[in-house]
Image 1: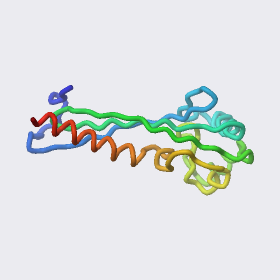
Image 2: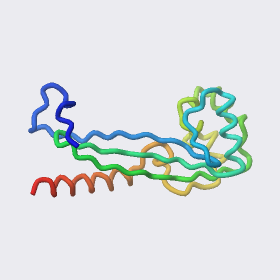
Image 3: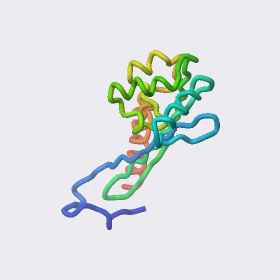
Image 4: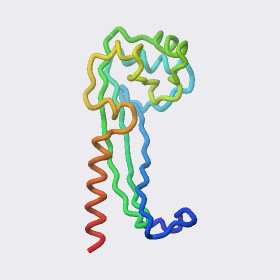
Length: 152
């Protein structure tokens, strides 16, 4: 599609932008987990990770302005926790002012308190943390190709 009606004022065709939008959810045991609504829900999420792995599913859309050409993709990573992870980690993270209620699935793999409970990650840490660098690079290539094709 074309999004010329949505361009910022003062935007001219001499200006070219690439707008990146994205979102992420955590999946576990067949459920989609958003940001926890409460500390108790965050503890429930994390307790479940001890018995089976969870996955992050991140999506990304690149939009070229002013053409409106878009490309999109999804990247998934799976986190295998040790059985040592329990809901108590949420209390410990909150004591350190970690924003667990702002993270999908209550996950904060970058925090040392969480990291010690990770067995392995299938995928990349940047994907788990919300934006896959590999996905963005691939999408930039796809967008470049579409722009070149569109210029013919």
